[in-house]
Image 1 (tube, helix red, strand yellow):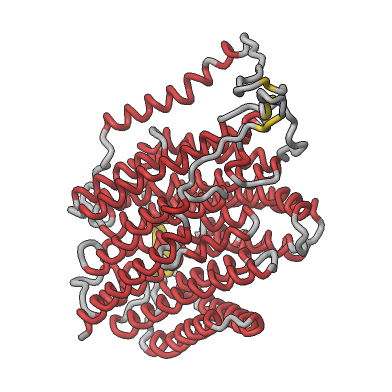
Image 2 (image 1 turned 90 degrees about the vertical axis):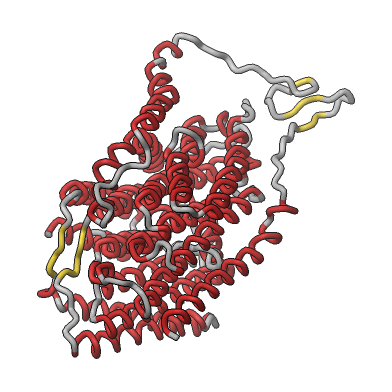
Length: 638
């Protein structure tokens, strides 16, 4: 109990200290120590509670409810004030209504009918897995941020508010820890709204016109989802006398108003996980400094949305709510991958691939079968680690070469071998065999086939093949050429190296250790949630093949390193259709003129560009949700 509470509340200590202290050296020290402590705490909690489902009686801590309400009111007041000042009206309206509904519900229905749940906290294998992801990946992102933000302000002439940036990152982690262990839906909603507010602050960090606009877009969409979530909680408590997740999932014969409540909650999950038609907020988040993008895309914000849908999966499946969410997820996966083809900005590629992969997770969770939930949880693990490695590597690349355009990364291997290695591992982790994303996608495909969702099978099959385009183009640029020119004097700092090496090792580790993760964490979770003696969709032969391929890719080359060192290979100039000038980037043609070698990828903007697909896809996804809502609400209430 004490360890769990320490995990939730400890990040608030460095958050306060970092906000108050402006000395850069002291800030760096606080971030390093705090990140280490959070990693240790998250690992200890994960080890202690794995396979030990635990409920914590929080009834004696009634004052927590009032503290949360006070913070909710303060957040709402700040949003209302800022929104009116900046002339963004919808976000303040949504925030006001959601806060009002929760407060009125608390002081009327909850108090009058004594709906307080004794089991305010519930921690199971899914919670421990999420805690490990948030604690380890989130802390490494914070560690990377300390030195990165110093360099960020060297290249960007914006107001230096690093103290606020650091504080929000740690507060973000605290809210996420609370979110994944909250059984009391009122507490879960509070943490949900705090993550929305934190993302708003991070996206608008630079205070530029586009940053402010995108931060309010994110706030409006997620506050809208929060309003629907608040309505669902109020309906659940008023008509069913329940305000906790376990009681909700235990209700028999879902139908009528209960189905509408589940639809509303799943809808909130769609907004938070940036599914179409709500994906623009996550794409707009790219204006923020890279560490915040990594935090939002990998270990915190968007994972809250898919986490909620996975929790609700027993009440989805073949009902119309489940079908709607599956269609939205599958469609988002396919379209997100298509649009990523047309992108040359590395952060945009990562953003669209994030939206795409979250769509696959939503689709898997919405089917609600044993195999599909197994695939969804595995996808969360691999995506969180590989995507955070890629985002942070892109941030470092921008400091090395002054650009994050994929076309400018040609020959990066000649500029920084380690950085190129990090990018290659991250990219391989997203789409190559035997890395985990491909394993999870294979399991997802099998789950869709077994459940009879043939249309989704087609979306996933074509969407998965499309990923070859944008990942292979990027990978090819990294290893395409070798330049002898010195392009940058930038050197990775200590925190940067520790973070990137750690994440790269984690990518490989989870690929080697996924059978253990499956047997020790995921299968027991599935068994505890009505899947009698759950069986892994990956058999022993598949596991053997994967481990053998990993040995070929990593272990054997590492063991042969002493042999490689005996051979000294000198780089030589390459043939360019003319006389090489000696730098491997230019040549002298037959007319005696010096020309630069240029190789460009094909991005097919006329077919898959944002202008061509994005708005149409948003309209289609919106139509799916509107039809789903009409059928769900109308069919169950009228």
